[in-house]
Image 1 (tube, rainbow, N blue to C red):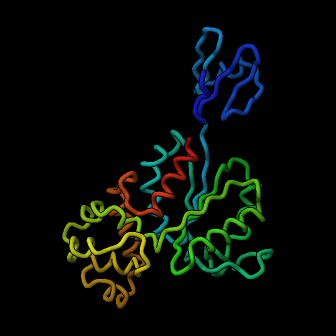
Image 2 (image 1 turned 60 degrees about the vertical axis):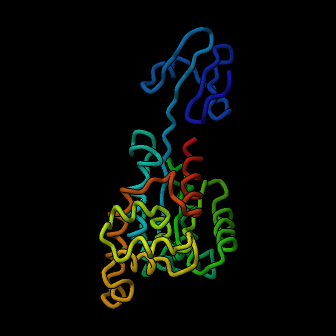
Image 3 (image 1 turned 60 degrees about the horizontal axis):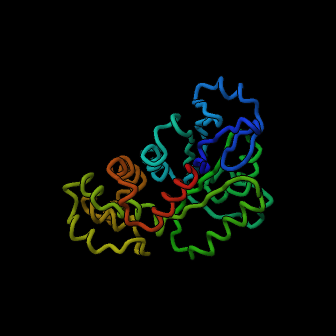
Length: 267
């Protein structure tokens, strides 16, 4: 009999063991029999279907970026609570890593990178947290070096915690532009949508949020900057575009890395 996928286990009557992800967990079968979410079948080997619910903490650099996973995660992971649970923590900007990683954050700034050095250790000491997913824009940083720096930080602060970093290239608006159909459905009367969208090169360094603003905001990015409404409008984009997004069809390579990594957690 092949091993089941991670969310399932089976109990061999001879060894009195449940195998979950190939790891034996010795437990009396009667304890399993009494669980409501398990199904026992006879025939010598008892098959136990165990739904392993995981809890994930998502750290996002701003409120508009936080709104996207609120809409998107049920499409990827299933409805909240039926498969997994999660919490989303939006910050007030990305900030920068402090020079001394042994000291903490600046509580006044409330920026993600400023706060990051203290977070892995705190989450590792908190029961019931299976993974921490950090989502941020790469902006003008060199992606590989930045990602390596973040991973080294997490490994140093808490080597046992599953911390996953996903970078939107160049900005999270690239994930909207990766699903042009979703953009057009959300903003069917956008400013020159088809022509401008066709010129966009996916995940390019091109001032991505300004590019999207030129597509769908009346007056484009220049007017949006003058009005100082960028934060509010970006939040609106998340609310309007994300419900139309189809994760499997998204053309953004950085989004696909995020999407596939979540599926790996769910396996």
